[in-house]
Image 1 (tube, rainbow, N blue to C red):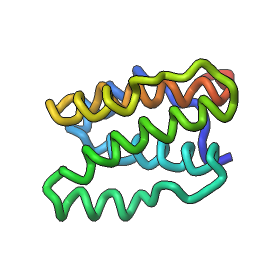
Image 2: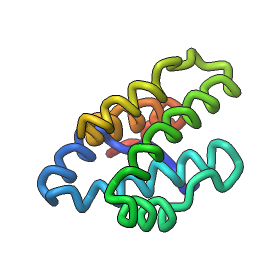
Image 3: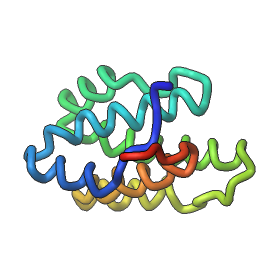
Length: 120
């Protein structure tokens, strides 16, 4: 299993301690989880990273919005209560520079698809 349960608190702490470097790994993990849950290659970590660099972060905002939409799609397909405002919330928070909050929300929603493993 490529995806899996990840602690939101650890993601926030490690991102802050590493001045954002851990966030690259965290987003990569979320992309892998979404790809696994949708059964298609929706996200390419290298493409998101490269396009985010080239566009000075604008593509990353689009990616955050798209990730929210994909999580919503997965929730609907699995008959789970959908987080209808997740794509717009992801977009707005990303625009105002709060992408770590968006990552936390996305991880919280993705964790609902994976059982928590002992020791995680």
